[in-house]
Amino acid sequence: MINKLIANMIPLFPKKFIWVFSKRYIAGKNLDEAIEVSKQLNADNMMITVDLLGEFISDLEEATKSKEEYLEIIERFEAEKIDGNYSLKPTSFGLLLDKDVCYSNVREIVAKAAEYNNFVRIDMEDSPCVDLEIEMYRKLKAEFPKNVGLVFQAYMRRTMKDVEDLMDIHTEEAPNNFRLCKGIYVEPKEIAFKNYEEINENYIKILDYMLKNKVYVGIATHDKPLVKAAYELIEKYNVPKDMYEFQMLYGVTPDLRQSIVDKGHRMRVYVPFGKDWFGYSTRRLKENPKIANQIIKALFVRG
Image 1 (cartoon, rainbow, N blue to C red):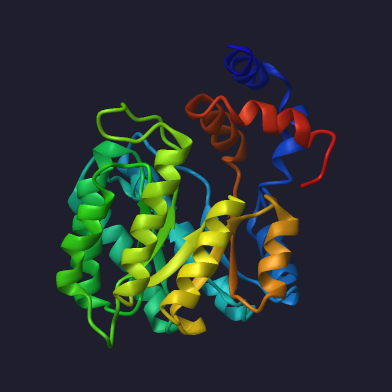
Image 2 (cartoon, helix red, strand yellow):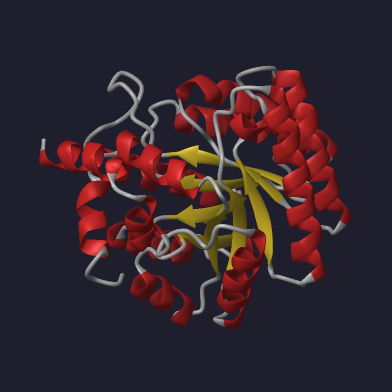
């Protein structure tokens, strides 16, 4: 109840106050700021994936604008020779308005990245989007086998089957490329695990399957027990360093992040930025009020 109260109150505060904690987890309000953060992360021996904030748009003109902004992002990041790739949310390109228009927009972005031999990650969103985003991944991978990947959420009860079903398009030359995270959207218990131990158990089960079957995995977690389990699975299957990477959100658990890099594992940092930072921050609070505790801590304690 306290978390919910805080989560409901924080969006009422002035934006300058919200920015005090948001700037620790958001790389900036514009492209130049995101580039500077990305360069620093590269200098610290970390790769990045950049994400322009904005999702669940209300008209297709916004979708076109999102596409044009992403094409500019790719041109700028490639010109700056940043070691990174691109993440996007299909709802920013009209997924829930017109899936064909959305596909056309996203395809253009993937094609632009492919021109630079680079890569686009399709973020997995809430349950109404899952089938549509898997369908999009299948279609794009057929045309761009090495330039597109997908996210899976371990708290979804269906995830293991979804991963298994996509093995029909997995090849040694162009393996499936998945980011595995826990998941943040609020879903009913009928379709999503709610218990911490259950979610972690499913995460490890899915990760085991992916690594055993030579899927390229972005191991996206800030949970120390899951990091430890990942180390054990990497050793168990003798996974080459070029077949996996760890992934973390910008500004979150920097000490754990550095310890993974120090052990010689590759690390990619998820770098969100954009003028929609306020909407992003407040939406995440509504979706997961438990974040409120972390916000209060973030005002006083780094990391």
